[in-house]
Image 1 (cartoon, rainbow, N blue to C red):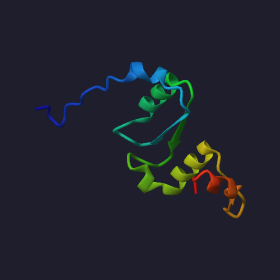
Image 2 (tube, rainbow, N blue to C red; image 1 turned 90 degrees about the horizontal axis):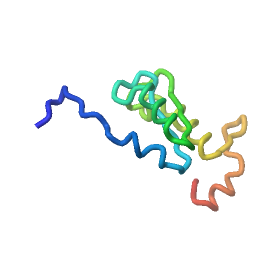
Image 3 (cartoon, one colour; image 1 turned 30 degrees about the vertical axis):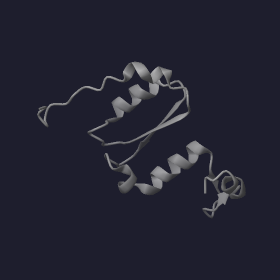
Image 4 (tube, one colour; image 1 turned 60 degrees about the horizontal axis):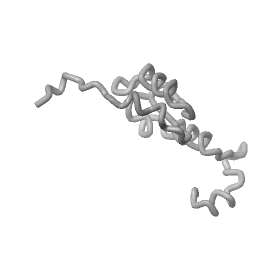
Length: 99
């Protein structure tokens, strides 16, 4: 049994350069489980990755800063909003099943 205080190092670093699918790496500025330096390393190793660090968030950033997380995801998938917050081109997104 592994002690809860003992961290087991992740051994998947060698696989990351093989991921060629556009990937969003998203994390919290104050995340202590997956800290920004770890995410930055992942970003450097993945050729088509985009890194978004959500300010003032920890590990549960989707609960702590949901609007910021949604904006990062929408930007990544190409959703644009008008100044009123309405999705532009939502007819296309509906056809693709994204809305």
